Length: 415
Image (cartoon, rainbow, N blue to C red; front, side, top):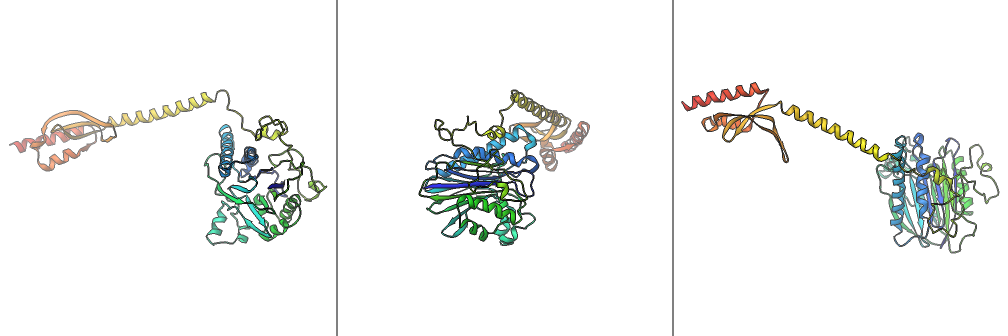
């Protein structure tokens, strides 16, 4: 079976920038919604999509392993960006992926973008949101309808941020001819109810359904970026001119509109033109190879740059500083310990010890400082037991005074 697909992304009527990114190809459908805001959520989503689009080739038998690997590579790419520029710390993105092998979908999901299956007139949500309001829904405290207006509806519990390395949800969905897959950012599913989405998906081509879904979301009052991908499973191959689509923050090429009109004519009162189409990989380039792709400047713009020439020196200096601080702390602790004294038993006699009456594995924190002639056998059982347990002293003079007291008691006992 084959995929007939369409993808569109719109900045919406409120946001100044589009932080969504999406990709649709013959084997791969994915939507990533940046969560960074001021710390460049658009950079996180576009970086993730650029890494995930490498999956757009015929999968092997381990389809979920390939999806998981793609998610981990995307997370690693974001980690590299944050490591190079600490100002990006806090940027993150959702990721919803559907990898197709001609008979089934391998689904990977993290965050609150969603994947739906429309089959024989029924719409089924495939993914489960990783959000605070979804946990309230799961506990029965609020309804799905109430979640759309909840004050914390945008609080995401899991995302790709290059730091926490969250594991995605992974599962397979068997495909049937006539299935329609719908993947979207929360700008659509957070506004439209299941009935409205099912109504839109029930008619028209994938391109018509994707455009109509974006328009309906904005007309319903969506204040977010809206990205929608619609793909039909069919037994007939698509037209040869159907090329992979890269949309949203990850794209900068104008997209052809099969409906015969510009995007701006569809959504009055908001910015448009965020979508793009990428040409096919040249025939002489191996499948999945994009290293020398001249038609995708965003790949170069958002790709992590290699570390600076002296990155190793920077790491060495940081390590040296940390080791120096550790040495200072240890030296200060050791110096303090050598000003402490206590009285205890040594070889059957009372002795003054210098240091702390404690030991670490493989390391003694004290040593005998002054040995005396006071014999524990000549002391009372109570005094001898006290010495064996160790007697703390304020200083060396205090320790010597304690020894003198025991010496006097020893003399009395011996008389």
